[in-house]
Image 1 (cartoon, rainbow, N blue to C red):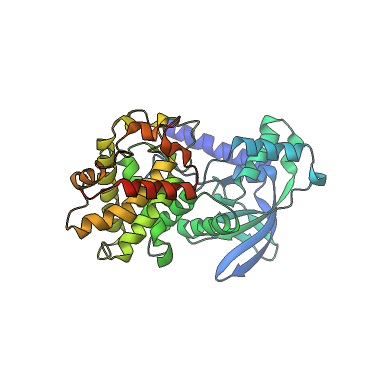
Image 2: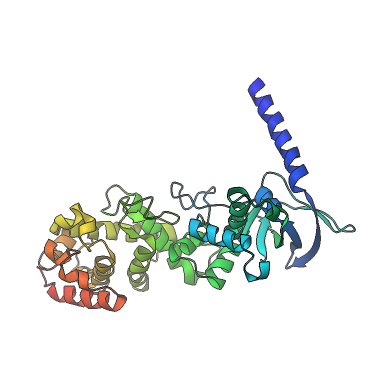
Amino acid sequence: MADIVQQEIEKIFKERQAQKTTGREVAAISFQQNNHTLYSTVLTATQLIHHCSVDHYDPDQSIESAKQGYQRLPERSRITRIGSFIINKDGYGLFPNAIILSSRKSLSFDKPAGTLTLPYAKQLRVVDGQTRIEGLRYAIEERGLKSIASMQIPVVITEVKNRLEELEQFRIINGTAKSVRTDLVNTILTALGADVVPDKDHWKIAVTKVTEILESNPDSPWYKQLLMPNQTLKDHPDKIVRTTSFMQSIRPIYIWLSELNFANHKNLNERSAYVADILIAYWKAIKSVVPEAFENPDNYVIQKTPGLFALHMVLRDNLLGRIKGGLQEWDEPTFTRFLKVSPEICDPNFWLKSSGHASVYGSMKGFKELAVFLSESLETP
């Protein structure tokens, strides 16, 4: 009990010290947009560092977890580049772009005085600008340039009703105005949920769920093989391919199945599980006819983009229709019977990264050519 009391005392002391050094009251202008309250203000670098936090994506959390974040960790090279830009006073020492923040709770604002009170405990979330803030932190804390601590930065703060509104703002800013990798955008849409996301974007949620299933299912040949959002090859050298590529490659399969009404009686979660079951069966069949290529995946391209895209094209354009047309099931034994008649698919040397024929196909045009070549090698079993 004494330890808990001591911890609370230390917490209060730290908060009071932060108040002395960072300041809580700032001049601001309040305005409304579609029943939302926004504030335009200026915060110092120190205030941004002490009062703001970022919801980072955690690969160890479920995509649909309420605790799951939605932003990547900023790249160290970009942080130091921004910090150096500020330190060297490049661009005439100007740093004019506004940081976009959000608050999931109503903020205290004294309208007559035009004074906004910043919350404790880093309750302001960074929607856009985390790398710039980290650049400021780098300049102050790592490079020791204390004079930057009082540098004024323009800020816009939006009061949001909940985390989903905040997440949607991040998606719009970073998925529309800026280029953000497909896997992270799709993960954000998945977190928003099918009820919020337009029907035209439901496929993005589905392929994200399918990818997560294949990566997390021990029965899948892709188990723990996909580089998830916010993971890097440096930290996960055992990963084979990015989820971005995997999602792009399975989109045509999901759309094909949807257009032919094979799973439209199911809800989105059920459709995703249905597609995942087909893909797991398919890749288990591929692994069974050419196991050598899966033993050391870095030495082969069958689980790299050439094999990934080409074999998924073969599945959609050749095998799905032929198998169903023959009133057979999309299961591992059936896929195996069809695949084993192809000398190329069954030949590990064909898939060698260093000298295999499949390795020469290095673009989307090439993947399509490889898919046609492999389809032609498949005869009716």
